[in-house]
Length: 458
Image (cartoon, rainbow, N blue to C red; front, side, top):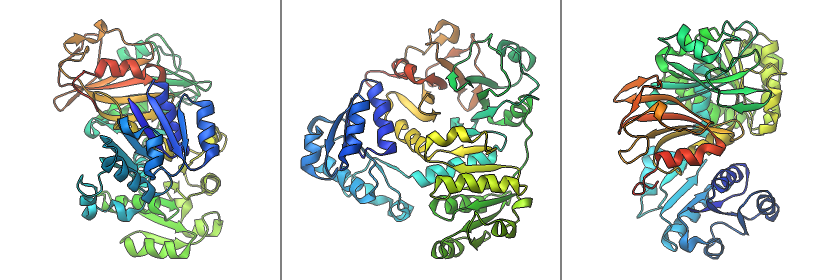
């Protein structure tokens, strides 16, 4: 597949790394020559320096025979024009654009992206993706990571194991015997900084970070088995009243369980806009680093603090200060993945990486086969892939134990009709089933082969 990626920033670079690693023909376009040079020096990609919306620049990038363009520059307008040029001049069949301005995303203007207007096949909104990720973190406060699959009927939970975890030193095979009715499988383990797909005889140890794929009805039970208490979030303090904070507050207001939220926003104009657009959420104008403002927001009585300003260091420090003031749970928005190792020492419970959420959204629309959802884990070390099994797939009609999956691949669950099933070796995969697979990055291409059929592309 030949792909043009416009924008060599964090998201563009990560997508390029992922796709070039799977032996796709990738060309990166960016106006910054240093970013292009960094990409071409470290990745197996071609680079073009120039404005991504210019027809001659896209032609130089190989737009005449490209299969897809991904417009992920920092400018919404450049991304939109790049897709228009890709369609009108070069007839590129698949066009994905990252758009951040909320006005472009309003449902009432959705006709804007029709083929006869502004032809964009997929619009990705980082702020909406991040707000959704934040809500999922709040819904599972004992986890460091969580993502929904199978129409919300299944969850991937990231759990840090503590010394008091009751199932330490227990082989995973034995866990299945002890909790035979639990619809949950440990699909990934991070130990000493390395993520791997575990074998049935592997044991779990304190400080392991594990990924558990579970039926949504069994989330609380799974958390309890791995030593985590579940507590309903009733009071939330949000630091940052930008698009992400506002999106989270609106979603919390729309929920039926009446979560009480407060926003602290430093910029007065932004705080006033947030106050005008929210009904029940209290908005305070002040610095989230100021302990007096935190106490005015009753941080000591809050169930969670969500730090989502546009500055990583502010988010980390606010999360630490809130924990010191008595807030039991802190979630920080962190753009720089190299800061992730600080979460443990700083006692920050969970973090959200906007790059990872955006990359996951884009990858969902790139994979071959009937891929319905995809979630990138860690620094693109692995993926959780949800896909439909087609009749011509090598998986269809076979028992799981008969299939030679790569070592880094595990089946997390199957959905037959509307029923989520915990897989065993004797489970037969049928055409039409929805399958959730954990796959290490090196094995994603083989997973695609198992899911792909020649007539089904994108």
